[in-house]
Length: 326
Ligand code: HEM
Ligand SMILES: *[C@@H]1O[C@H](CO)[C@@H](O)[C@H](O)[C@H]1NC(C)=O
Image (cartoon, rainbow, N blue to C red; front, side, top):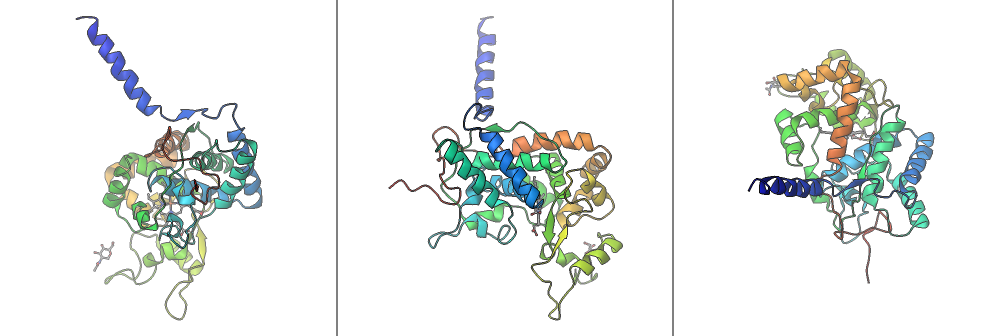
C-alpha cells in the first residue's frame, strides 16, 4: 500500500507533463535550419521596413485567438470562402504576411513538407520582438496547420472599444488570465494604428462629452491633428499614428503612457479602471525587466492555445492555401 501511492503520483505527473509538453523547444533541432531561416527572413524584411515587426507580433496573436495557433490567419480568401484575413479586425490592417511567405518558400526548398506555417509564425513573432531592441524566449514547436479559416470567427479577437470586464472575458475564453491580458497588452509599445481604430474617442464621444474624458487633453489634441475630420465629418481610413513615442522599441513605455492617460485605445486605458490592473500597470512602467520576463512567459502560453499536433491538421505547402490532396 505504501508503494502504490507514490507510483500513482508518478503516473499522474507524467501524464500531465505529457499533455503540457505536446510542443517542444527544439522540435526542429538539426532539421531544415528552421529557426535560423525564419530569423534571417525577419531580419532582412526588418531592414527594409521596421513595421513588419509589430505586424508579425499581431499576426501571431490574431492567429492564436481564432481556432488556436494554426496559421488559419494566413489563408487567402477564395470565391468559395471568406477567410480570417478579411474579417473586420484584420482586413486592411495586417502586416508581415509576405515575410512568412518568403521564410516558408526557403523552408520548403530546404526540406519539403516539414515545418508548419503555424510554427513559422510563432518563431517570427519571437524574432520580431527580439529585433525591436527587445528580448527573446524559447518557442516550443510542433504545431500543425489548420484546414479551416472563416472571417466570421474573427469575432473572438478583442475590439479596441472593449472595457476591462469584456477584455478579461475575451482572454479567459482562450485560457489566459487577466494578469496575462495586462502583460500582453504591452505589445502596443510597438507599431501603429489606423485613426479609425480610436477616432470615436476624439469626436462626438457621447451625449455629454465631445471627446473621451479618460483621454489626456494634450494627447487628444495631438491625435486630432494627426487624424483630422474631413468635410463629411469622417476620418480618412488610410491614416495611421504611432502607438507611442518609440514605436520601434519593445520597452515598457506603453505602461507609462497608460498611467498618463495616453492609452491609444479604450481597451488600453481600461487597464487603469481596476485597482489590481492599475497596480500591475504601475509596476511594469517602472520595471521593464519584470515586464519582459512576464511578457515572454505569457507569449509562450498564448502561442499554445488550442494547437494541432501529431497527425491532426497538416503541413501546408503554401501558407496562403489549404493543401489539396486530389
Ligand atoms: C487586449 C486586447 C487588444 C486589443 C483590443 C487590440 C487591438 C488592436 C488594434 C485596434 C490595433 C490597431 C490596428 C490598426 O488600426 O492598424 C492593434 C495593433 C497592434 N496590436 Fe493589439 N490589441 C490587443 C492585444 C494585443 C496583443 C495581446 C498583442 C500581441 C501580443 C497585440 C499586438 C499588436 C501590435 C504589435 C499592433 C501594431 C500592429 C502594426 O503596427 O501593424 N495586441 N491592436
Ligand atoms: C460619457 O462618457 C463618460 C466617460 O466614459 C461617462 O462617465 C458618462 O456617463 C457618459 N455620458 C453619457 C451621457 O453617456
